[in-house]
Each structure stands twice: as C-alpha cells, then as structure tokens.
Length: 389
Image 1 (cartoon, rainbow, N blue to C red):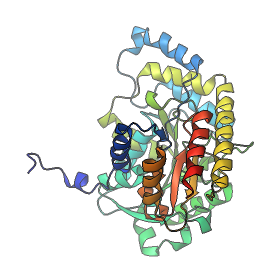
Image 2 (image 1 turned 120 degrees about the horizontal axis):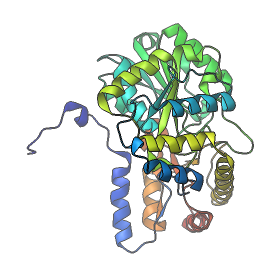
Image 3 (image 1 turned 90 degrees about the vertical axis):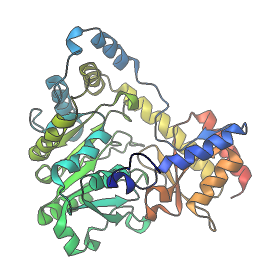
C-alpha cells in the first residue's frame, strides 16, 4: 500500500500516452535495435542563431535576473500585437489583450481554473491533445467529447451537440491546424464557431500552435480574424514549433480581455512569469528576420513529400497535410492502431503513436511526426516497405 494516497484528480487521469511507448521502446533498444522515433512532436531543428545571440546578451544583464511581470514584459506583448497585425490583420491592445505564457501548454492547462466550476462542461475535441480534457478535469469540470471524423474533414459537428450539454457548457476547445489529424479549418468554420459561442454564451479557446507550419503557399487563418471572435474567445500561441524553441517555454494567449484577465489572475497566484531574457529572445523571434520560418517550412515540406510518397508506395492511405508536421495515417485492414504501432516497433524499430491514444475516434489511425532528418525518414520508409503490412 502506498504511504501517500493520491488525490482523486490524479486517480482519474487517463494512462499517459507515451509511458507505455517509452517502456516498449526501451525494451527494443536494449536488444540493440536502431530506433527511429517518429512519435513525439519535438522539432529536431535547432533554434535559429540570431535568437540565441539575443538570449546570450540578455542573460548577462543583471536587470533580467529579477522577477518578471507575471503578465509579460511590455516589449514582448507589443511585439506579439504587432505580429498579429502583420500576420493576420488582427488588432490587439498589448496591455489588456495579450498575456505571456510559460509555453502555450501552461496557459491551456491553467485557463479552465479561471472559468470552470465543478459540474460545468467543456466541449473538447477527440482525438486531441490530452491537455484540454485533463485541464477541464483538474478544474472540476466535465468534458463533452466532440468526435473529429474523416467524413466531417476532422471538424467537430456543432449541430450534433445536445442542447442540454451546450446549455451547461462554459467553454469550447478547438485546435487548427490540428494535432494529431493535421486537418485545417477555414474562416467559414470559425464563423460557425463564433455564432455557436454567442448563442450558447461560452468561451472559445483556440490552440493555434501550428499556424506557421503551412505548406505549398497555404497560410492557416487565425480564429480571431473572424468578426466577433474577440467577443467570445482567445487564441493560444507558441514559439515552440515556429522557431524550434520547445525547450525555451514561451508562448502567449491573446483575445478577449476578460478571458485574458481571468487567465492572468490564475497565473499571478501560480507562477511568476517568463524569465525576461527568454522574452527578449522571443521578441527577436517574432519581430526579427523571418527567413528562418520559411526555411523551416521548406525542410518539413520536403520531409512530408518524402514520407507521403513512401507510405503510399508501401500501401498506406493518408491525406497529404497542408499544415503541421504530422501525418495521420490509416491503419491497414485487420489491425488496430495499437497493433500496428507495436509491430512497427518490434519488427522495424519505428516508433509511431497509435491514434486511439488521443481518444477513441482516433482508432484506425496512427500518427507520424516528421521530426527526423530526410536520411532517417528514408531509412524508415525502407523498413516499412519490407514489412508488407
């Protein structure tokens, strides 16, 4: 018997998606197998040098060694507002409509604490990034799961949400471009979401971490581009994928000032803000030369094309993604997603993520992250083709 009994919120946690994968990966690796990890969405590309240089100088300034503002330094929030104006045509007040985050995951995880009471409902997509549901649960709320299905282009069917559920809902999570399905949403979908949110009086939380990972000239829109969106919600963004800064832990939330203020109130009681030197590097990232972002897109486009061609040649079915660095691949007939993931690991040394780990409607798919160089991806394709799945 454990000495310290865990709280109910921890007991109710679903199994951690990557824990079993890591265990199996360690077993296979111990046999001397060369593992190619296509499971985790952590960029393998380095942070651009001009961003690193700004951090180096900022770290040496003693003025940055004190507590930062919990809501973000003024210069960083102004840079965010200017970037939104340039990129999306969205006007933001940096003082009241922008808050810095210790990575967007932190903000998403804390946001329900500001607006969800026990018994309240959050509308949560599935399959999805697990934090939406877990954050709702930690706040004492209930998740109503909105299935993302191929027949609906992996967009939630708002008309299928029961009236009684919608009436109890306090917020809705959406995420486009989407993890794990790589689906994208257009302005028409966001317009439907805004109308739904106004009718049901709920807050929309849009996780927009992948908007800068669009390919073939496609520029994913911001939810806030739609008229009225700022009245009903906010958008979470991250520098992690755009600038290969996953370990730096810096992001931001923007939009409705009441929502931003509520999140800020939670954060002021939980953390002390983002290290100011990192925020200064963040300013350089979003306000500086964007050639590095174009280079990032080029790298992932080439990787995407290589993998899609190889997967199709090996007999797999998938949609060519217009954004994100994920491939959402259909499982061959006669297999479950877990069975495919296990066979790929055991017989080919390839780590992929079974779709059911992101939620029940993810069954029938597995996710590949394009976070290996082209040589390793080519090797992965060779191994796949030899399996004859």
